[in-house]
Image (cartoon, rainbow, N blue to C red; front, side):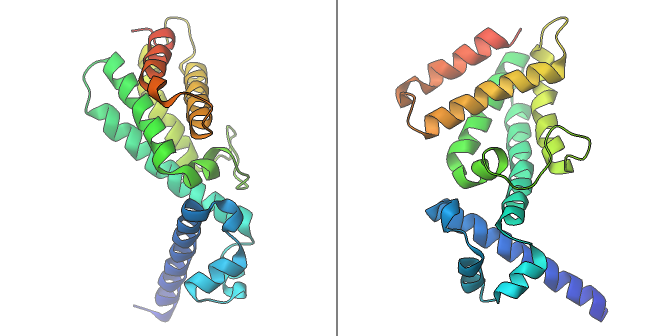
Length: 192
């Protein structure tokens, strides 16, 4: 291995460590606790080393969001691939999405609530974000209904899921009604 390859590998490892540490700290204490000073202390590198990888917290949030988008896409695809029939796949998609939001609140916030400097719904949207949307579209296109643009249907269904995830996490919805809510979303929006 050349010196250049070793340096590139070490740089990538430091970057993964920074992102993993930021994610861990955010999951434990919230995003307000994630500062470059605290990250530098936790990973035992100086702040200038941190800044050589990320210009600041915003870019770190963006890196966590991209990692989370990849995980969300994988979770949705795994859940839907195990099901037979469109209705079962849509229900599995909804459960996987909502479970992801509950299990990974800081990552979910990085993806959909915080400014990570990422472009959404544009030509220059990063590939992991496009793939997460594609994971939803793959299943939801089956149930969009005649004459309905699958991408638009996916956006509306996603907005419903996001609302349920956000309101549920904020304690604005009765937890015991989670399953009836999910069935209602699937029954009323998905044409099966």
